[in-house]
Amino acid sequence: MLQGIREGKIENKLGVTEKNAEETATFVLYGLWGIIYNDRFTKEKIKPKKTSMEDMIRRLFY
Image (tube, rainbow, N blue to C red; front, side, top):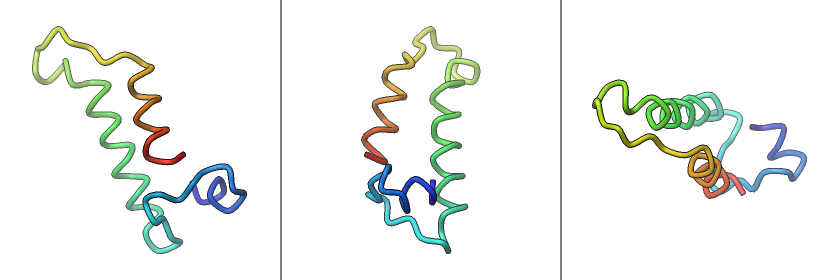
């Protein structure tokens, strides 16, 4: 994430710094994990599409 920000490939909408990069990455990955595996915990038949997760990543970083 930091490399992408430094190289200008990722816009820094979240205000990621050297100090908070690990916590930010953990938060984002935990959130995406929750979206991907939501149906295992809630027993719902609604499964998010890969495109919706990609859209969320774009909104956060680009």
